[in-house]
Image 1 (cartoon, rainbow, N blue to C red):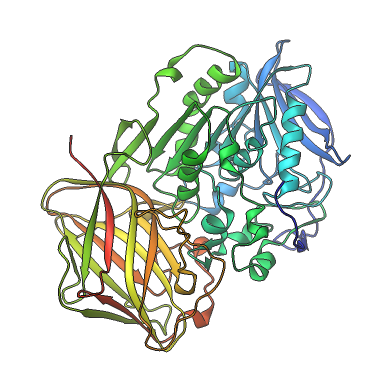
Image 2 (image 1 turned 60 degrees about the vertical axis):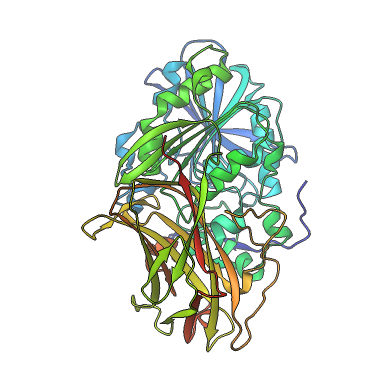
Length: 552
């Protein structure tokens, strides 16, 4: 079990409109529509006696069927909000699915006619389920184990349970599968955080606003819920509290169909790749796309069913011929080609250093012998000119696929800390920026993001690799006046193709100007003050390490 030697903070659940408590349970009922038996608000007892409630959608024909479980606190009932509407550009909508579909999860109308049972869960404390609502806690993990075992032993079950879904429905799969419930036969995490601290709540040590949704906008407790905002303030460093939310991925052994994207930086991209790399499953597949995640998820239901046909029904099908890795190499918005690979990261990657030069804002494969500086003010967080950028023009067709790292020598003038926001952008041969889908619902994103609060720069030497620095986040190391320090900034995985004459631009900013409000960071105001100085050339080997894939 994870450590729990910390005190959880809770908050009472109120509707954002001020309508009071919202944890009302609709009550048990049954209907039969679309060839399904639909049972609502079925109680499932946990090992400690607490009851949580599920909705069950079964084929009408008598028999034993495999179960596909969807686990998230967003509401299993019909009255749950249209969360897609909160991001108008996301491409998703409740109107695109049957009345039984729930946010980010399988639509029973797409599954029951094919011989599957769908079970939607309101976790402990969510909506009408009893208890306190927590997020990726050891208690939620135990409850997940209990529900899997319950579903695998019901009269209508064939004893095989799978898990499926996007985002929280993916996070929960890592957590529950790490306990290896005997009846869990396969998982299909479709973009999901696997390190709560590094990927969701703090990016490079800078706190993200996304946690305001837990609880609040999307997660409504019956009585009270874990207050993630309060906990983030009390636990700004990685400690037992954050460790308790992360699954031991090495313990996952069930077959896994993992789907990641290049287009969900700041939320799911890193965690999904880490999950795929670290799980111990002998049968595992990775598919990587560069599109909007909800559209992609519902466009590939056939693949999901095919995967579960094999591992929940024992059907010998095309899955055994799937490539271990299938990834999209992006060229521009929703344009890219898929390619089969044998592993991740790609073994043939040629990691290449592009050295920064402040004199002409350029990058080169050869370091400059002259020490130079780039400076920008950070006193006005809304000033878009507060950045330093560096460009590299490609002379030949070049693919970058994988992990990138930015090493900088930095100095703070007028402060003892720095918040650095980094973006990679592609520019075409006419000098126009090439936008990409980004963060679920946006159309003008960059190629990749990276972040760092400089006081969090201490590396975890055991876990870091030359191309992927991993930070300890266990203490703050403040800067002294005039001190120049090296920092390594992880850029989340990306794939992009450059034609001759196209340009890679690396921009270092003092504020999160590229992010939508939901993903902006609540950086402590005093972290950025005065002037940022980037030292390049001479003894300051500031550079970008990029993953060049050799041409076939």
